[in-house]
Length: 577
Image (cartoon, rainbow, N blue to C red; front, side, top):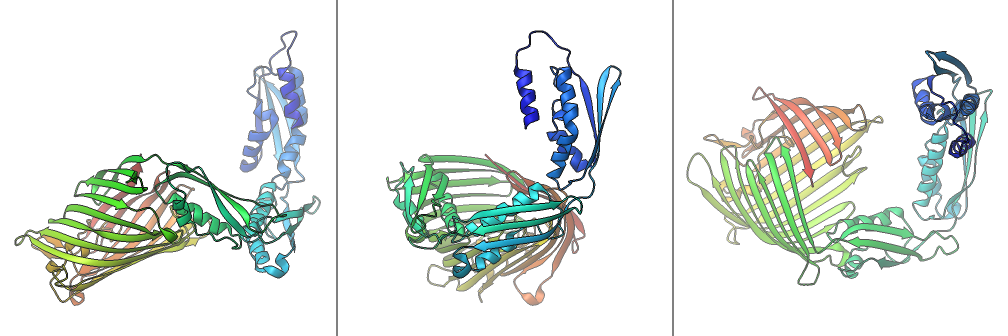
């Protein structure tokens, strides 16, 4: 601003002689939100702590203050403020009182969005999408920030599909200070439809370009879509090879056909070591580590070793994965071991096999063939060993607004497997598992979380003939709160054994006081049993705190188990480094 610029030049200019320093206090009397705005941007307030202001500079700032206050209030929709200043000297120090009566706020009365270009005949639905994205409606208070945000959001929506070169050809906000009304007019020009050209790759040194080519879902000649371009970016970031991914699509309206798609990547080194610590009220504190080598056999195969030590269980896994093939499918071989000692039941589980997996922006698919060999120790009887060769299919769909902190949408996982006696299995069985979470936004901050989890092993054989790691128990922070982790199952002599069937559900309401802090109330219900007609339904109610931490959600809950008449705290968090 000219005031600030003149002041800066004046202060910076060399002085022939010392001048009196201006020490003063500014008190702004205005509604809280406007007071914060003026304290942050009004020159008289910003320079109040300067010790080298001259008397002339001080008087200049005081004189300019009312006009600058009016200019700042206009950005918030107040066009007829009353501003007065009062100068006093208290105990030798200058005090300036600025009294602000903002007057009525200006309200939007009409919004006219106009469209021109090929979109009118090619894709009129894009006009509707742009109108739906417009965020400043009739009856809303007018402000410069809201006006700029509405235009920016609407234009980005129009540019997000087909019309990458779309632009605003005219925008006008007509303000009537006498009536405190704003009339808005914005005209959009779609420009031509853009189609995608070939992908150019820059930055690959360690790993071959064909890894990116195999993952790339984009086709030459397809109509531009920002969502499709983001899908490529997310696919690449999901691989272990690239530390950063930057995509740029040329928006030159003179050459919309087969517009170039430029990709620049930076690569991870050949080796990676990661460690982490965390805590869960289910299994206590844990420490984990992961080592990866990304160029096994000089063919970009990935060798990884993962381990985790907890209070009640330990686990480790070794895996060798090939680079992504066509359409992003990854083939791998793995061997894993888990030992758990939970609810007076000790389980030693080994599994090994092969799998084929594909991860995309919204869907995950996994086909696997794994051999399980488990040993179970309980309070009553000797240990039991069971084996199974299980072909399995798993499907996951993610349809949420935010993967880390979702407020709307759902996540669904379905898994199905089978074991056949005499084919490396001790029993014939079918196994199904399904889990889903639904997020329903309530107002601008709150949400309802609904969770359902189902598991079933269908077999006429004893559960002891099925590997324990393929069976089910319930209870704990992510199951039925109010009960210990895996405390709901088949009680045999004090040992809680895994069962054939499991169902749990949650209904939770979250109220967020700020962006990062909230509270929740919830009701959980569920059971795990071998026979439905002998089942006991367990339920728990409780409340908790929610924190959107920099590393993910942190939940602190306390729940009351209605059947066991006890209170239990739950804390889930994780810190990676």
